[in-house]
Image 1 (tube, helix red, strand yellow):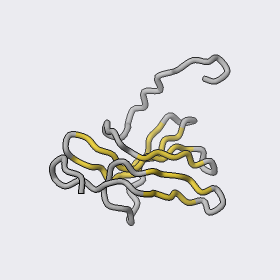
Image 2 (cartoon, rainbow, N blue to C red):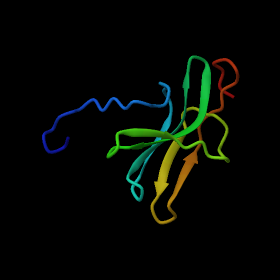
Image 3 (cartoon, rainbow, N blue to C red):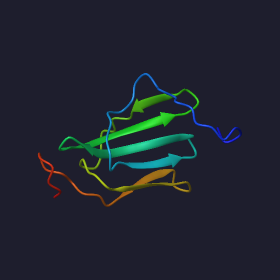
Image 4 (cartoon, rainbow, N blue to C red):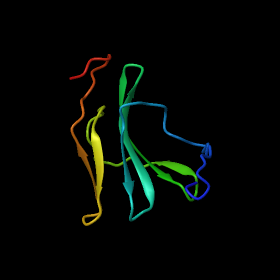
Length: 99
């Protein structure tokens, strides 16, 4: 809370699996945070999740078309086009090797 300068644990019921090296951007037109990809325990994620602060809920977007699973990419939101843009990152093979 920026007014009280304090943190709150939102603890939503459903959430994406824990990960690191994911990409995140804020979609200002829909007032939600978008998460893509990431890495955990030797596996890369290729999923897309949206978090709505007002409802305190994550939604698995499950788009029909999506980039391959990757780690370390950058995600930005283009307000004018109302599009998310993913740049870079690395694909991961079945182990922990970057490809």
